[in-house]
Image (cartoon, rainbow, N blue to C red; front, side):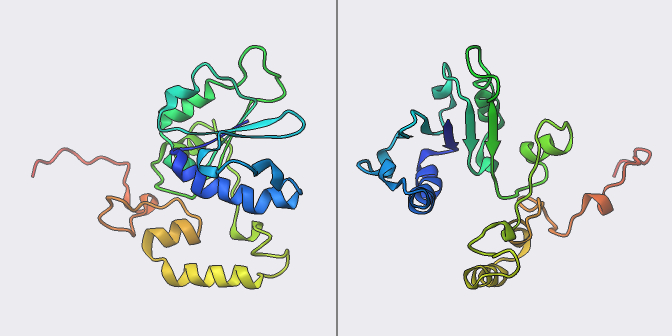
Amino acid sequence: MFVGRQTRVALTESVLTTYEQDILPLDGMEWIAAGVNRRWRHSYKYPSGSEIVLGGLDNITRVLSTAWDIVYINECIETMLESWETILSRMNRPGRRSRFGYLLADTNPGTPSHWLRERIDKNGKLIERTTPHQANPAMFDGENWTEVGQRYLDSLSRALTGTRRKRLFEGQWAQGEGAWFEAFDSAKHVDDVIAEYDPR
């Protein structure tokens, strides 16, 4: 399995920290992370022989000549389309088990024109699974918000405004960067009818 993010530094400070501090201890496997600092770690090796290989996508040619059963990309909104397609070319290669070949990703929402959003909406090449804040068991116990969850939501509610609020609190793919008016809504403000050319 390959686990990546646009830069290795970002992967180290986010995914690997959560993996080592929160995930491995739940399974009693924290010893897998012993001996090597996260910053220099290249992989996690399991007793079964399975291995999680780590990498940044900022020099995507490093993945050429590799083959993967499963790839997970964190914060895919940062990933360039070229990187995504190059990783995709490393899946289902001859000699690999056909029952695998999964390319998975997670992300916070971004602009609606991002290549990731367009691939989900227009050509059906990607399947989207929306994960609300309630999906985090540390935040929501199945019936009510936990104390930690409520505190986190309250802080988001107070701190975020405009596009950041829409994306990080409400989970919407919202236009923002470079937009003159944040209230722009293509359903309301775009007319498909082109009037006769009128120079001004």
